[in-house]
Amino acid sequence: MALTITRTQYPKTKPQDYSKGFGNILTDHMFLMDYTEAEGWHDPRILPFGALALTPATMCFHYGQEIFEGMKAYRTEDGRLLLFRPMDHMRRLNHSCERICIPQVCEEELLDYLKELLKTDLDWIQDSNVDSIYIRPMIIATEPVFGARPAKDYTCMAMLTPGRPHIPKGPKPVRIYVEKEQARAVRGGTGTAKCAGNYASTFAAQAKAKAQGYTQVLWLDGAERRYVEEMGQMNIFFVIKGELITPDLSGTILDGITRRSLLAIAKDLGYQTVERRISIQEIMTAHADGTLQEAFGCGTGACIAPVGELTYGECHMNIGNGSIGTVTFTLFERLTQIQRGLVPDPYGWTMEV
Ligand SMILES: *Cc1c(COP(=O)(O)O)cnc(C)c1O
Image (cartoon, rainbow, N blue to C red; front, side, top):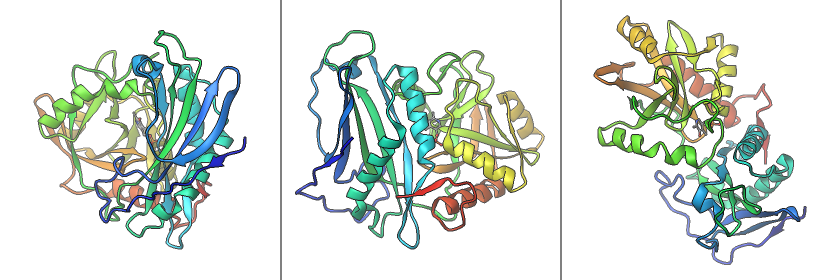
């Protein structure tokens, strides 16, 4: 399909400080493409960033038929722009579509359009204060009726926001609250899809944790609240007795591309890695006997978030000594170097725009 590009007449003034810009500062253009039963996906277009006109009856507002993705492109020292595992993100987008009953998109075509969007806003990523750009594609049901059934019309969109500033020394550890009552996902539910409803349902627990000074919530399984699943909107890893452990993809966990990448990197660096069920009891026991060495969350947005404290009821577990752990840092450094083209990419993960 032919992409049409309409450039803005009014480029925004670029900020000096991007530190709080993630998701807040948006670039000058956006991508849109429509779906109808008669025409399928059609009219791919890049437009000046701006508001949409939708009636209050629009289906996505009522029953949450929406999915999204989050991927990044990194600027290299020699000024190239590298997407990280973009086809994995396109495949996961279609997986989310399937679960939420949204028609599939052509993965190659959508990626081509996203590359064009990046090229249209290239001046943003060339700003010396910015070293990565986060790409947020999404699809919403746009049929203007509120029947509780899959919509007939959809709009796919994408926007760009400058990525979180890179911290070469690695991010600071965060405090995590283990949620005992509420659950994020159950088997057979939507935990493996990036759909809007999965996030709204976590905000109450997140707000409770924040009010007590924690950064995020650690989710346990929905059936028994015994097994560790995810940390906020990130996958979680533990280092116990030198072994890197992450919950297996049991049908409730989001199959994170950062998680997948870190598992591959860790294996190649010679670490023992294992994907299996791990209970909060096992974590407490390991902490008590001194074998819980490190813990961290991971995802595209922040890359890695070391866990400095984990609180489960009355049990406060301090992990590490207030700074990022050795294994965590080794993995963080290796992954970010590949993403930024600082070392050769033996995996074929990066794709030049
Ligand atoms: C997006 C997301 C992740 C991380 O996935 P990445 O592909 O690594 O960005 C983990 N958990 C949840 C719930 C997510 O939405």
